[in-house]
Length: 68
Image (cartoon, one colour):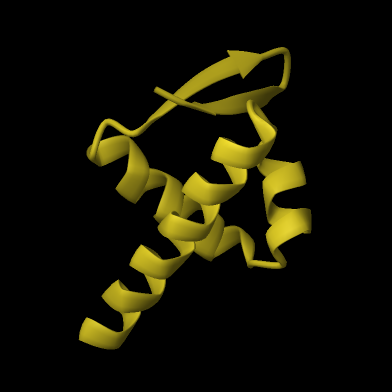
């Protein structure tokens, strides 16, 4: 269990860094640029959201993710 939590935390850090360097992005672009699975992407986004680090807004049929 601890190993999975560590992996989620590392993915969250990678996403935070990506958004910091590239600005607002869609989940699809984040996933493609970081090479992570859908599951890991959404677990890490949940982590960042719970820590109030990201804003998630709906745009048409997708979402935009940005740092707060």
